[in-house]
Amino acid sequence: MNIFCNYILYFIIYSIIGWLIEVMSFLVQDKKFVNRGFLIGPICPIYGYGVILIILIIGTDKTDLLSMFLKSIFICSILEYSTSFIMEKLFKARWWDYSQRRFNINGRICLETMLPFGIGATIVLYFIHPLVIKLVDMLSYNPKLIIAMVLLVIYLVDNFISMAVMNKIKKQIKKQKADNTTEIRKKVSTWMNENSYWYRHIKSAFPRFKIIDRVKRIKDVIIPTKKM
Image (cartoon, rainbow, N blue to C red; front, side, top):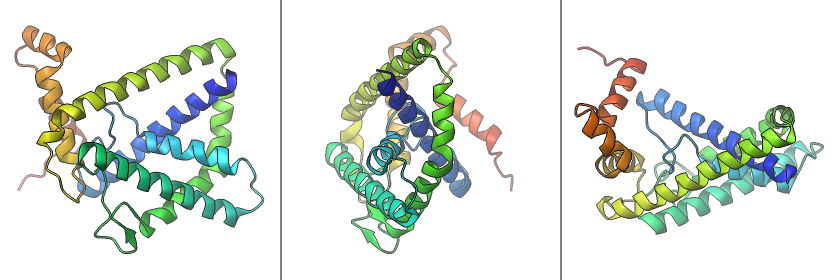
């Protein structure tokens, strides 16, 4: 059970790190905040699954750097391609698209991202994961069990809610071979604002309160609008 809790915490930590990487890269590139993940919360599970698979398959053997690099590329590419394929089949939408980049396969994976995945995975195994192990091992069994179970329940509930919302709005999403994450997140936010019980309760108490307006104000503070 202790090992199971360890892997839950590893998964959550790397999923949150992945979400931060996605959001920050988009923030730097397009100067706007977009929740790049499928889930409502600040988490990108594909990163968590990727690191866990790499840890389980490659292990802690660091003797062959080239082998580790190539295996990491293979594992991450298979995971990214299969995730993109399944998500598109389920919801008729794409969370990423590499069709405009060279050496891509059906726009789902490309050489430009495969190489960073290999480099990133190697850095994780050599430097980051040993620190994460030490961080997790600082927790005694009972607190670790409680934290792991609470985070697992939150993650599963988020999956359930996100799947339900996506099933409600998927007919509104235009089917296209392109990254339409921004459109998806807008529709998810709109649906949540209009249909969430807690949001309706807050709105009845504070008629002028709007989640979308609050998000826009936060974004304006982080990225001030340029005046002409």
